[in-house]
Length: 227
Image (cartoon, rainbow, N blue to C red; front, side, top):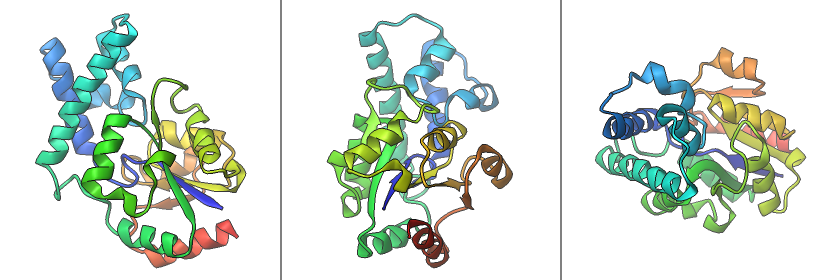
């Protein structure tokens, strides 16, 4: 039995940073500071190339797109450093929850639409190797379709030699919840950092949490599901 975590909005609640980084990136390229309401539905849970193509509407080469993604993610990482220990930090209670999962030898990994550069940054700045193995993490590398396609979670399960039907997935965004449901995982935990509880329920999440503060209660539910 294993657990697969999305990262942004699930292990860290970085919504304001994600939105500010996209606003700054698009302002740099268009001179327009787009209202968040206008671009929000193409930001959270999507691979960055999808968001860039939607707003800039250019037919970029692979090399051009990678350069744009690198630029945008550098803005994001600089904002993370700026907001370290304020917005950029592990979600409340997540350290205790992950410690207990590790103590119980429940295998955990990460499957995120973030690029490798961000994943490396997360591991270093948040000391994620306390609970996760970098080499087991699945991130966006343009070799598979993005969420809501379930491939990212199927690859994560395969990477840790687990059957997806025995895995629990933690997700927060609409596309991510859909991908988790589509993967046929054992259960989907919706983290209400972006969507409200009713929205997560309507999308198919089996369990809804606001954060990890009540980690003992959450752990009990997870153990029951895994058994």
